[in-house]
Length: 128
Ligand SMILES: [Zn+2]
Image (tube, rainbow, N blue to C red):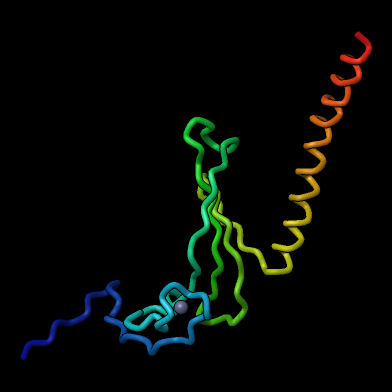
């Protein structure tokens, strides 16, 4: 039997961690057995993707990805939003609902100009 000494700077082989309790929506659902690092034992939901035409490359229609996540050391799940330029936004459920309200309001505001122009065009047409 030979024993190989651990070289300085090389991490000793870690033992596999016991499974964690998965969130009900975890795509794995098996507790992530076989992981050697606690931070690898996180749950994530299915990815929801959406093309964001006006973002980085309008011709490509880059993808925004959204999913739920829960880390092994924190029982508080959160929502991850990944932008095409690799910005990752992590939001609590409360923040998600706040963002939804603000997005809906901003979309409503943005739509108002189009509606007013439409009304203006209709009014101008009726003057002719
Ligand atoms: Zn899981």
